[in-house]
Length: 342
Image 1 (cartoon, rainbow, N blue to C red):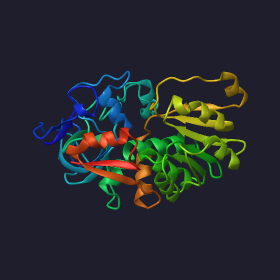
Image 2: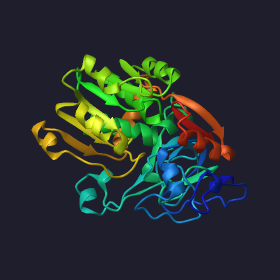
Image 3: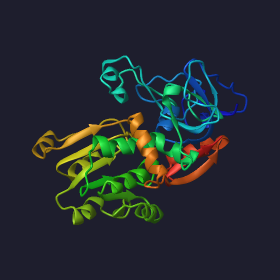
């Protein structure tokens, strides 16, 4: 089969397009999927470069956003038919640790993720456990499904479940023009929030406003905190920050008393400073998150199916141009989700 291989960690130049990589076979309880669309995520870049604290066996196939049709099923698989349109929930859990036994499988102590520790979807075919397969409604395209499984799920889980955003509250996300941000804007708006975001160009700002952002600022030409305080003088209820140290302090100071910060990324580093006194005097909360539950992903797909949400697909690349696609993401030249087509 055709696949993108990471033979060693490094820059985009290490990505190898292989036209003769062995097609995997599904083991007991597994399903083989003919991939129709796979999405790019920032984590794919970290995997390529070497993800801090996570061992990745090389050679490796990245990609956790997988949507396509069932090509083969392993022994013991029931309820999954060959030819069915499906997507994959990429989080793999042990089912045996204390958190799994408490029903909190998304917090599994022994978690793995397809595309990270296990081979992923930058290929013509990919294998996944049958229990991780989600049927796709006919009204949801493979591309839209691939746009939802990691970035979309992170946004949905963070905003609705972890952040508990309520009607009438305020929500802010830095850089709302990417795959996560374009869905986060729509999710927050669907929940009845006033939505704030930033972008680096007039084109990005226009698109974010079209998706429901009430206030979108150019971070390169405007004083973002000052602009936000014009309409939110006491601060914001919920902020989602995937940027890291570069924006952390500003985000923290923009929170309303009793507000919450969602941390879900490390684009500019893994460590930052925290003013403890400011934190407890203002009753602020930090909540970290990664992905979400399978049930939440199903809820998200239902919202796409009924037209409530619409993933913004900004770029499409053939599989062999995965290096160029990742380079575009690294340079922040994209808007919305980048999709690879095997």
